[in-house]
Structures are given as C-alpha cells and as structure tokens.
Length: 57
Image (cartoon, rainbow, N blue to C red):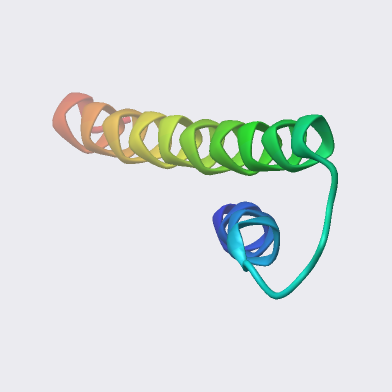
C-alpha cells in the first residue's frame, strides 16, 4: 500500500505530465495518506507482535 501511495505521489509530482492544480494536490494528498496509513498499520503490527511475544500466549 505504501508503494502504491509513493507511486501516486511520484506520478503527480512529475512536471512533464500536465494535470490541473487541484487534481494534482488531491492525488499527492491521497498518496501521502496511503503512505502514512500503511506506516501506522505496520507499526501497530510490530507492536502487537512484540506484545504477544512478551506475554507468551
């Protein structure tokens, strides 16, 4: 999901592609949201994994 978000950001930040201003900003914001959401999910998964190992279920 993070790679997809970064791909959206890269595509819309390319000056060779002509996109209207608000569509470019919307797409860059969507890409940033995908990257941050996947980082949140990844850190939550690591935290839950460490918590389970500590509790020795």
